[in-house]
Amino acid sequence: MNNEQFNNRDVSDSYFLVDIEDYPTDGWGKFKRIVKRTFRGELFVGLWVVMREMIRFDIHTVSYPQEKMPIGPRYRAVHEMKRLWESDAERCIGCGLCEKICISDCIRMDTKIDKDSRKEVTEYTINLGRCIFCGYCAEVCPELAITHGGEYENASEQREHFVDYEAMLTPIDKMKAGTQLEFEGFGAITPHEDERVKKTPLAY
Amino acid sequence: MEVAYLIETVIKVVVVLLVFSALAGIGTYFERKILAFMQRRLGPMNVGPYGLLQVAADGVKLFTKEDIVPTNVVAPIFKIAPVITAATAFMAAAAIPFLPSFDIFGYTVHPIVADINIGILYILGIMGVGLYGPLLGGMASANKFSLLSAARGAAVFISYEVVTGLSILAPIMMVGSLSLIDFNEYQVENGWIIFNLYGVGFVAFILFWIAAFAETGRTPFHLIANDHEIIDGFGTEYSGMRWGLFFIGEYANMFFISFVIPLLFLGGYGDGSFLGALAFLGKMSFFFFAFLWVRAAWPDVRPDQLMWLCWKVLMPIAVINVVIAGFIMMF
Image (cartoon, rainbow over all chains, first blue to last red; front, side, top):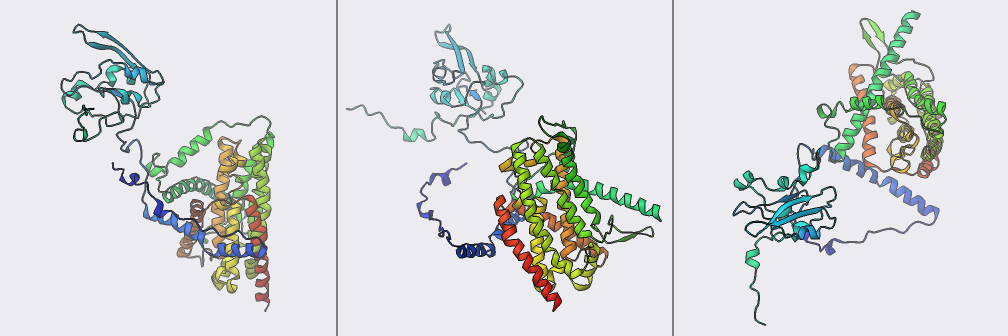
């Protein structure tokens, strides 16, 4: 999807003032206006336009359940937890930033220090009933672990079908197949970031 | 002889009733499809092939819905009002010849229920009575929007009926009869009425067509049940089949007016040949299509604009038209 046509906001050269005639004040002027409007045939222009569209038959309907529109990479649907490409381990380091920033208090996590004295996430739930899909959690996550997916059809018999940590986590077989989709939305690394990165100036 | 006539009439009545009840349903399908195509949509697609069975689904819904009579309404009038609209629409069809007469098994069938000598007067009169449905329904509904709609109905009614009546005076003067069959015979001999009498017929045709939009309450003059202003007007408090009767009446009226306009002005079914019958159905389809076409293209006018149009513009034109027709025919 390209957004070029939206990036040009300078429309000053195509702006023009609509030419509005003065309103008639006397009866003769009103009569003349009525006659002019009646016989100018504007009504037939309207008829022609709808007839042309019918003949052209350029239907724009998306018959939704059968066909779907592509959604943008920054769309914020049900959350996903990503895995590391290198080790297939979970990316989440249990820092708790998402829990802290969540403005509707719907993320709850519990951590402990495991036997290698690393922080380990024991509980992680998102209450989707409260979530407003603001995207702050994905933006704040330092590891790009919690992201938004593209699954907007979140009707289910059980809320737990979505909020379960295992359900949000990328399945291991998908990970082995290398088909985990990287999040491109807010908070993600912009493309070609390596070329643009500069050394931190250390000399004052 | 008498018994045969009676049986024939009853059969005709039943056929007209069944065919046009079904057509009213199919008319809604056409309306939704054509409006959708003109707005680059698809319209009903999921029920049946190309959504054809949507009509049946709507019918099932209407029949099985609960028939609610709200508190505070004047129940007898509230209940009878939709019946008036539907019944008068079909009663008006009695004097319309739908096709030329044809032979079936050596028996000549005239596809008109009753060729009465006041044909067009009867049709317009009964269609006028049809307005009592919205009027009484709106006043009995104990709902402000329904009341507004009833008031609008009365105002619209006295406006367009003047134009309807005056505009067909000139053709009636030409033909010298009120029967639609006589209209047809006259046009077989003298050509279509819209081309007759140096444009007088054409002006009458335009006036009658405009008034037909008001008569059926279609879009430029869709004031009585204007969805975006007064909810559904007189239909606001109705549910189920009572509302459905209003609907059937409205669409049957559209079909009957679409039959009447070609009969009055565009040569009707011609000399009675098969081709003439086909042409008649084609003309009728065009006028029905025009109702939908105009609805897709044009905005609604305000009630005061409609009254202004009818009283200050169309009625003077109609009167002048009648006077000119009289002078031309005298000299």
